[in-house]
Image 1 (cartoon, rainbow, N blue to C red):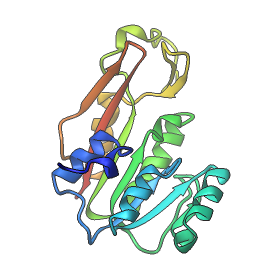
Image 2 (image 1 turned 180 degrees about the horizontal axis):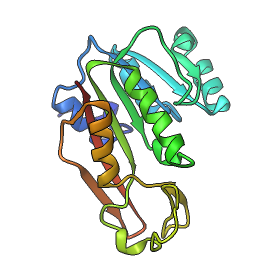
Image 3 (image 1 turned 45 degrees about the vertical axis):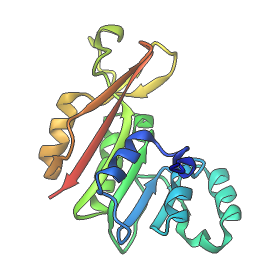
Image 4 (image 1 turned 60 degrees about the vertical axis):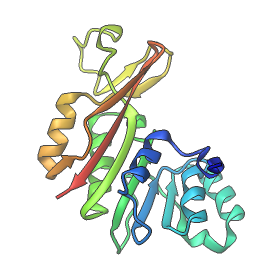
Length: 198
């Protein structure tokens, strides 16, 4: 019987990238906005060269204490501020970019992630989108600056198809997979975007 326990806390769409062999053991990986460290743990346990960052100092403190031998790989930083001399081959940014405060904040975060990628590197993004729930959102008669109140009561930055096209053109990116979205009980829609840097 296959032991799936090591994968139990890994995002299912990230598992898809593993199954497609897009994440190799010799790659430098960045978990941008690592949260509790569920993906950091998986990659570390499986011998990957993984660095994790988060803007929550309490989260970073707990992770550094939990992994004292790897504390230098766990860093306190906002996505838009993180710098590294070396570039990364695969960046995970899972449920982070939709906390952007406006278009400028989103663009600053996204641009920094692309700058951190090696040529042919991959940026894996999961975030809220308006795709599939446009009819449930307020009429955009006013400039919402990209941030909308969702039916679930939360406010999130929503990416749309026009923005995705803009990002691929501006940064010279390819989409490795078709845009995938999941509408969660008419409350929000989550997009999976897999960008490759030319």
